[in-house]
Amino acid sequence: VSIMRGCNNMCSFCIVPFTRGRERSRPFESVVKECRHLVDQGVKEISLLGQNVNSYRDMSGDSTASGDEVSEAGLSRGFREIYKRREGGLRFVHFLN
Image (tube, rainbow, N blue to C red; front, top):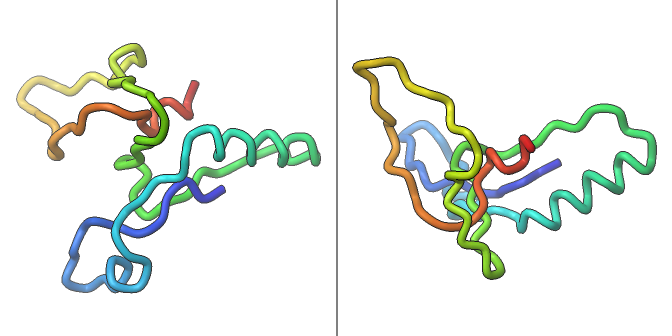
């Protein structure tokens, strides 16, 4: 199930940002509805797909979830996040619940 389209990374070797456009995430409820439909049809396993699913961000609706209520994987001492965390919206980790 595709959860997003496009990409914001401008890797020198990649054509995705130019052919599929900027990164945009499908609304969370739309993805869940499609998954439920597949389960009703007897599908046993569903993969969530996107160019970079870790940057999934549903900013539709009034959601102001920061992801803090979902436990984050801890980082080992001496490491930090590579990407600046964006605030607001539903993140990919919300699909894991």
